[in-house]
Length: 252
Ligand code: ADP
Ligand code: MG
Ligand code: MG
Image (cartoon, rainbow, N blue to C red; front, side, top):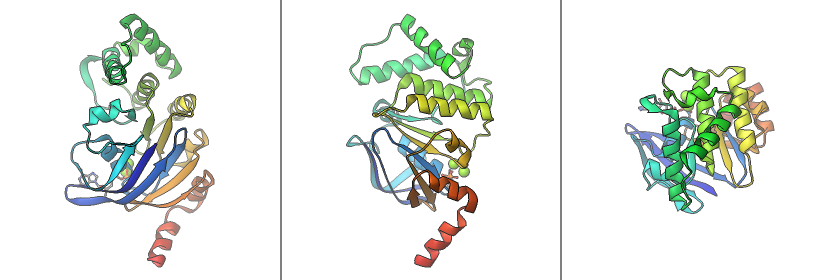
C-alpha cells in the first residue's frame, strides 16, 4: 500500500534522507525510532509535501499512486494524514468549519456525497467525546490557545473524522502527559483496521506500551538501519542507539 523507495531529500542544500526504504501494508502499524536529528520528522514532512524539502531521488507511492509529484492538499485527499500537518493556529476559523472543509474536500475527491451541516455536527460532537474534548472546542479558533495536550487530542479528532488510509504521527517533540498519550493511543487503536495503516514516530518506548506496533524500525542518519518486531523497541530502550551505529561503522 505505501511504498517508499530510495528516498533522498535535502533541506537547505543539506542532505537529510539518504536512501530510505519502507513498505507498509494495509492494516499494519510501524513505529519509527532513532536518535535525534536522524531525519524522522523530515521523512514525514517530505511525504506530506511541505515546502522547503527537496526530493533528490526516490519515490513514495500510496496504492500505486506517486505522491511526490502532488501538492500537499492532493496528498491529503489521497488519504494521507499527518498528525503534525495542522498544528498551526488559525484564528477566526472555527475548528468545526475547518474540519468540515477538510472532510468535504476529501469526500468530493472520493466521489462521495457531502455531509449535511447537521449530520457533520453530530459526527464532530461524537469525535470530541472520543478524545475527551468538550464540544465547545468545535467553536474555538483552530488550535487557538490550545494546550499541547489539547492540540494532540484535536489532531486525533481530525484523524477520526477524516478516516485516512495512512496516518503518520510524529510524537517526538511533544511533551505529552500520560492522559494525552493514552488519548493518542486510544485514537490509533480505535482506528486500526485492515485497510488503515499507521506510521508512529516516537522517541520513547512508552507510547508503544499502548500502541502495539507490528514492526519497529530504527532511522539513523537518513536511513533505516534496523527493523524488527515490537521487541526491538524494548531492546532500544535498554541499550540506546549507539550499538546500532557502531555495528554499521564496523560493517562499512
Ligand atoms: P528527527 O526528527 O529525527 O529528530 P529531523 O528530521 O527533525 O530529525 O532533522 C534531521 C536533520 O535535518 C537535523 O540535523 C536537522 O538539524 C536538519 N534540519 C531540519 N530542518 C532543517 C532546516 N530547515 N534547515 C537546516 N537543517 C534542518
Ligand atoms: Mg528531533
Ligand atoms: Mg523529529
